[in-house]
Amino acid sequence: MNEIWQPIRQSTPVSIRASRSKPTKSEWQNAVILPDMQIGYFKNKAGNLEPIHDETALAIALEIIIQAKPKQIILLGDNLDLPDFSTKYRKTPAFQQTTQEAIDFATTYCAKLRANAPQAQIVWIGGNHEERLQNYIVDNAIAAFGIKRGNSLPSDFPVMSVPYLCRLDQLNIEYKSGYPSGVHWITPRLRAIHGYYAVSGGSTAHKYLNTEKASTIYGHVHRREWAERSRDDYDGAKTILAASPGCLARVDGVVPRTKQGVDLDGRPLRRIEDWQQGIAVVPYSEETGEFVYEQIAIHNGSAMWRGSWYTGTLPLL
Image: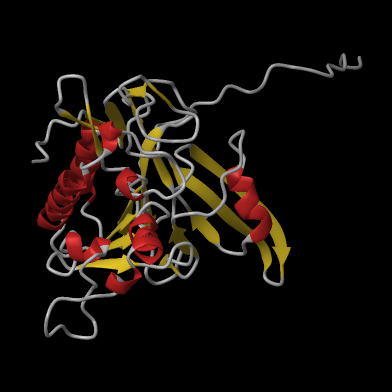
């Protein structure tokens, strides 16, 4: 008697024990990427200074740095807003004469970074906002351009420069000047820049993928973006990444920008922009140049990274 053919039948029972797997111990290092802080202030209706940077987000970044123990910390630029020195946009009295407080806060924050990462290489990439100071001097006081304190060394910074005012040499922090040319190579496969593209609709990452050959982490756009592209190469498939961690400025509409309105006293009227807060941690291999991009989103004053919550409780001053 022939058996009945069954085109589909129940599979054979399977009994599987839970696997025991230990991760391989990694010799990789961490790099932490801090994007656009826009450190600055305006005078509110009570006459008090109100920050346009987000101090909670900055504290979260510092908390994660303490846990990550990075070998590199990269500040992507526009860490100072410097609205007083803008030659392109109108300035209202609410933002004037606030530069010293911004410089003092930026210096203190950099000192906090150095104190909590004493062995790390810390790099500040100059952005278009830091460039405002130099451009203002060139346009309005060219005779003061490049002046240094008495008996300076050739390597000393000019007095009217961001690295001098923020004491970066004393904190052993590198400053990459010359926006938009400033670049820091995290590995031979990955570079960090402030950024020179700003495409609407969240597609800036694709602009870099279309024009650059190396993986790029950029700032400037204040949005969290991440895209990758694979191409055929001599050695096989080559994948490059373009990513923006977001920003560490306030995202409720008080940062000076082209689409911002002000009241009759010149104070910013809040208008939500398409910006998102965040930082990035990049584990990388010094031997091979390989890396992994970890995007950390900051939402409403908190962030999660590797199973832990961060709420920005560290004092910054």
